[in-house]
Image (cartoon, rainbow, N blue to C red):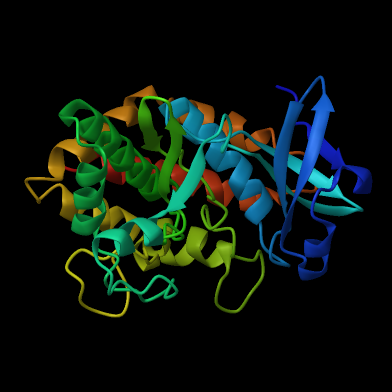
Length: 303
């Protein structure tokens, strides 16, 4: 199959040029045959990481799982490689992040504490979803979606599902407020994107040949807590495992696990292989494939 396209972002298309000095991210406009007429977010990866290709591969896997996620493309701005994510706050909808939602129900919730926030508890997240979506069918659908997002996190080892990386979309209509769970977004911190081909500690070769990819999966830490204790949450896989043991949450996580049936493990290689030459090293591709196969096996082995 052909390589993924690489979008060239021009300075003329940039909407918020004052953000360029941070070398973080910025919005830009598109109006072409490939991307259509829309707004996109260009994100610079942290130097030396694979955050750009991790975003793209995660997006393609999410689509195969039928997880709602915005479109992501590889992109280049002024010679710098990054990723571009399509704006999903369209048609009058506004995004409310998880920290805003949780603080709305619990005023003491610390909205600015993104990491080691042990009030960011899985039960509170699902309780908030049930309170927002008062119709039982709508609440179940949103909770099932969230369960799917967290199973996706476990599959790709996404360790960045903090309280600003989930939320709801709302807008005012003549008939009242309408809302839905926001798509799953910001998957850059996944797939071993921080590992190096040669490094004394974070070494892909060492995990592949010596420690084992399962060791890497276990070392991941999710910013969602189960019981509000400790300095960090469990790994994304352990979060799913523990939630299957909680009666009120298990159905939603089983729904997420069911989405794994849409995946063809043999297709992982082509998803990874379409990343253009030079964007990922052969060792990074080998590690990513091994990681996905190991994660999928672990998830499918859950009782």
